[in-house]
Image 1: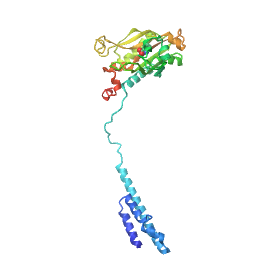
Image 2 (image 1 turned 30 degrees about the vertical axis):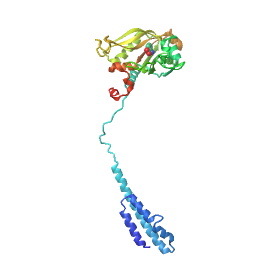
Image 3 (image 1 turned 135 degrees about the vertical axis):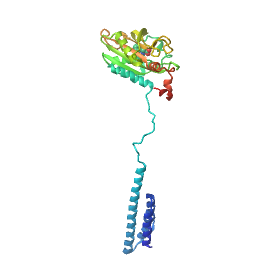
Image 4 (image 1 turned 60 degrees about the horizontal axis):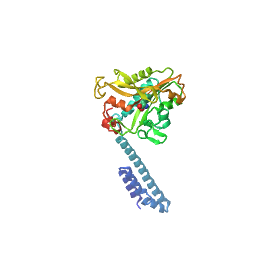
Length: 331
Ligand code: PHE
């Protein structure tokens, strides 16, 4: 075997290899277990030949390692250059996500009341009939107790029909003074149409303290209505009935579309009905063990969808559930 010729051929091949893969192929060809040189080394019988073959093998190995290093570095440099990201380049337009309109209004109402010193508390969507009806003074046989209007999970458990049970749970959990709002979903067995969805949202407010009067209630609602519909609005409160407030009122705001002149939005009355409120019925204080001689309180419960619909003048509540971006992106 002509070791010199073999070595020359190997070194030439190493020099000619243009990539790490090519160098590896040369290494396998000349130094791999089944190639000529290592096979010859295994058969060597005299020291002189052994030395010569080993020296040649080492020179080839050194050349392979050097070339492999060189190419590896060049390849790394090329990759770094190719994959470099210029963070100063302008990027294309990106769609920004946004909060659902109801979430926006929910946070707005929470902010208004946090600013007034109220606490935001959670209620539960799955309620017992005891908290959803009994504690709130709903008499036996009241239509709201019927499975035709309320979604029952079992005989004693419902999906809450209003946020008012959170009044009772809050009072049970703490002593006055109480200043809380509770916002969330409520459920009624309604067939969806332009003005009804079986799930909607309410904000419940509750204030209990010494000396709270109806004027505190109307003052607070006046503040809320102006914050929501504009400082130039007028407010009005008309008597109403709820089983858990006495007296009960319904809040009205002067129409923000026609400013009271009369239009389709206010059904030509100049006024828009926003939601219910009243002075906490002493029966609730009794239920939670508050001293009804010492404390008075007010509560209100309004629908957030109604506020959204009035403010943005869209005609169909169901839009809020369709998730059509052409609708959602307007808010
Ligand atoms: N819970 C009543 C409703 O859903 C609203 C309300 C809340 C009225 C608090 C008075 C006091 O219609």
